[in-house]
Length: 243
Image (tube, rainbow, N blue to C red):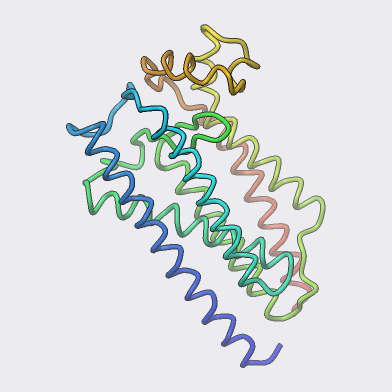
């Protein structure tokens, strides 16, 4: 690939990073408003009751955020693999700077082990801030590898066994985030009731007493190791191809 093409791609990635940082600030600013309304004395568990329309808006906002991150990857990538890579690059930058801006705006989180609500789709994800930061750094590394290798050959792709490690590891990481919350809900509801749309009000009412008790670090670490192995295999295979 020509030096001019590489230069153009570096410019695109720089712009994507700026876009993702700006999205991180937008996300953190929304949280500042919500905490001023619902947690004027500072965020902590158990959760405060949130009005139905605002709760629905939050879920839709998260969905819209994902759509925006996916869209920027589709618009900027040169191949299917790089589109995926730039999506996870945008995701990783957005997520890290979300916490950076929250720290400067609110002095929160107090540490990387502070518990946070990470996501609301399809159920509530909770975990120490350190978890998503590690995940985001992994995304950024893989994204830069994909883009770097694509500069040399547009035939670069992720093999099936690498996908298996990346996807399986990601699913385990998700399990680590939802395991404690779902275990709490199963004290009153069945597994299927937890994901039933008609049970939202009952679930939210019961969740008002939820305080995170234990994070499944062993599940998280196992999943993260699988992701790391997948990244290393991708790097070794493509590193040999471009030499």
